[in-house]
Image (tube, rainbow, N blue to C red; front, top):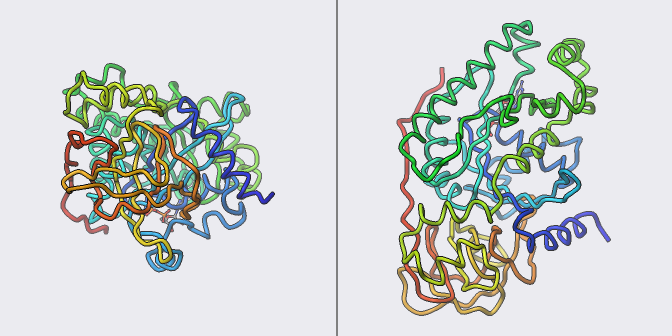
Length: 396
Ligand code: GDP
């Protein structure tokens, strides 16, 4: 059996175990390295070749995306990662980095429970860092931080350990100021959602050279900042990558610190859905019940040259299957599901069914638009998604 087929089978097996699922987005100010990081994660999970990650930019450029039949806005991929002896299914939604795509970023946030915020170590938190954080927090999505391009601090700016530490701490401080300000008024978030090195919710590294570190990874590998500076300065980046691979550091952080759907949905559903809290459908969504009524929140409509329109979104309740007749909010009558699938490296793979807690790709929902609530019984639709945008920033 081919490697890809094996990955699809493993994803299908894990789809039924919501505790092992993480639905995440990577969000960043433009050019901070989101695409390069995403490629690293895909390569680390065996989805694309290690050698070409960073050059291949699997999720990049309009032309490439059109050629392969995926949309220029949020693309979705699923991958697996073993953490603490358990395999996890990670459904990753790529969010557009450009300010003009603000609406798509917000829609992507509706489908996920965790947002990995990427910040360039040299530039620090930028206006769109603030915007994506706000979008995540408004949707009840938990943030973690990855500080990228740390290689530049060492090799280009020739910073020593103290200077580097000071700079990284100042980035963390700025991001935490934003998080604190935004979560103050949110009474459904009881935990402290600020990020910290000690807490393991901050990673550092270089997406370009494929190495990364976090407090837990440093404890595991025994490498400290001094070792990293020495190897980076000596141009031993391959050794750095092999000793402390970026994808392991980030994917471990995702599994450990982002909530699974069973933990996230009871908190998130009241924030994004204002229907009857005592109804069966409310209970089913809170329990991530795969036997409940089907509820899908559509976050993106893509076009596949062969299959036509594909609705992608988060299944909050029930199990999606071919042949189901589903209601689409704001329209009359039902649409028949023609196929269900998941995304792998931007390509759709048809599967038998997609249960609650997952990201699904569905054909046949001809009336659905991004933002539609699609369900097996008529129901109150999800809250409309508030678009947050900011003035266009011209980089100097
Ligand atoms: P995006 O706009 O956030 O998706 O950013 P990209 O992933 O496209 O990266 C923007 C530019 O930064 C590209 O030229 C990358 O090669 C470069 N880049 C990304 N990550 C790193 C890194 O860790 N170190 C360095 N030096 N450059 C990086």
